[in-house]
Length: 75
Image (cartoon, rainbow, N blue to C red; front, top):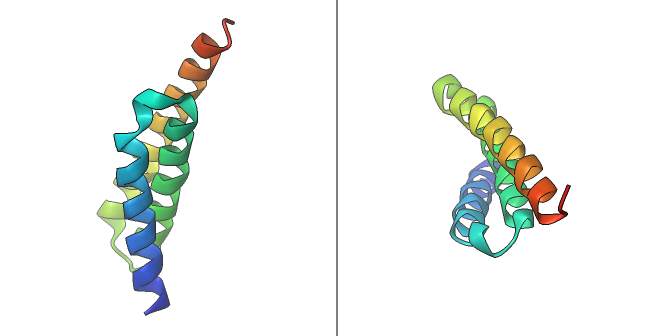
């Protein structure tokens, strides 16, 4: 049951962060972390395709956060 709740919270955090991405680059970072958590959930339930795609999403989101953070800071 705890694993199911973990997966639910990870995907819910992804949804909320995605909806709020335009407000701050930190929501992009939260999306990346939540995607990593969803990937971990996928590996734990042995859903390799889901886990792999979520891991890629996490890396893509981290890159987007890095770029948006640099733009926001004026670098």
